[in-house]
Image 1 (cartoon, rainbow, N blue to C red):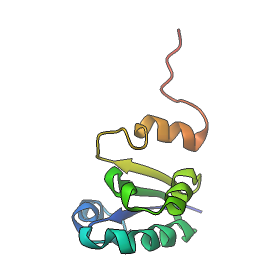
Image 2: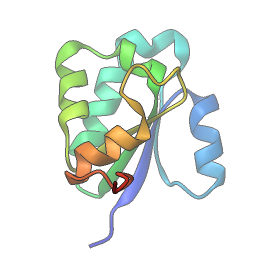
Image 3: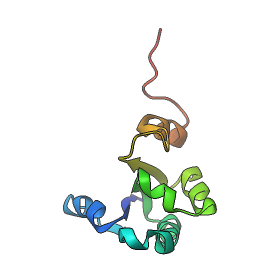
Image 4: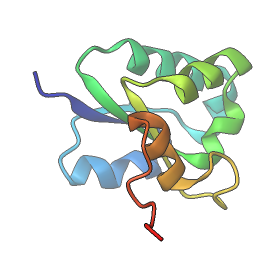
Length: 109
C-alpha cells in the first residue's frame, strides 16, 4: 500500500504543495491556529493513507503539549518540518534519523 504526503498549515504554506500534486492538506488560517491546528493535525495523524506530514516549523508552537508530543513521536506518519531557524525540531537530518533509526549522513572516519 502506498502512502501519501499530507500538508498542514496556512493556505499560503499548503498552496505550493498542492500545485506540486499533494492531494492531502489541512488549511488552517494563521489567525485560527491556536483554536484549530490541533484538530487538523490529529485528523492527519489518524489518516491511515498518510505516511508523511509536512508542517512549518513555527506552527509547532501553536500545538497543545499532547498533540505536539504525539506528532513529534509518531513513526508513521512521520513529521517533517520546514522553515523556521532549525532550532525547534533539530533539522531534517535529525528527523530522518528519528524516523528510521539510523543516521544516513554519518561520515565514516
